[in-house]
Image (cartoon, rainbow, N blue to C red):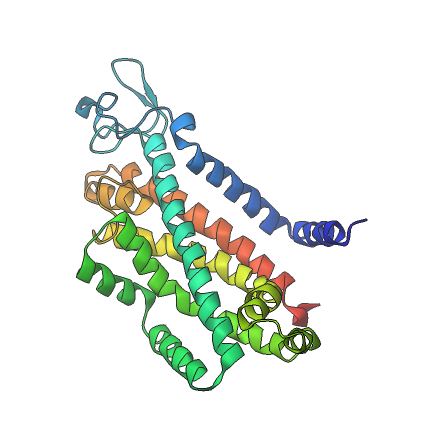
Length: 292
């Protein structure tokens, strides 16, 4: 059997040993499917003015309008179907969280591995910057960035990248310091391989396990952070629906008894973040040699 295939099968067997993490993984896959194919699986387009009527505003769950349209989770203040709004909100929230996580992983891995590889003053400079950033709460850094540059999808992604990259840099540096002293790195240097090739073709693949774990946890953190920023009115604009905006839009109706407008998007956010965190926690246990 192919060694890579055998290793993959062993990984699947180890991962499936935790039933809670396995269920969380399938829940996340379902959420991901719904988010990607939101225009196909949503009952209506909640942001199409031709299908949304203000006459359907704040209908409770399990309601029907005069045209016979059924609203499983009710409607919001603008008459939008809550199921469709949540599906579209998941699409935006996951997109922002995953994209910011990917770019933060690339940037953080570059600075972390290069700091460990070159050492000296360069390493000290990078790690002091990382230490200073990590000394501030993530929400504070993101608020300052968005307050300075304004809200928008691209600006929110940039803010989340700047918030997250330091976590990846610290993890990549710690892993690279272990790998640098191994024989395969010495052999690559003896063969006169370039520094870039050694860092990103030889060292980086051996540092991916902890980076993947940090990536899953940071993606969940980025999704919740984006929801917080949008709830405060500093994240995404109202034309780009997200779970945070849906929760914020329904918050003003809570005291009038229309709880479903905020509660259901909040439950969707909670399930999404919890499923990612459970998968990340199990991956962290699997890759921790002290637990074996």
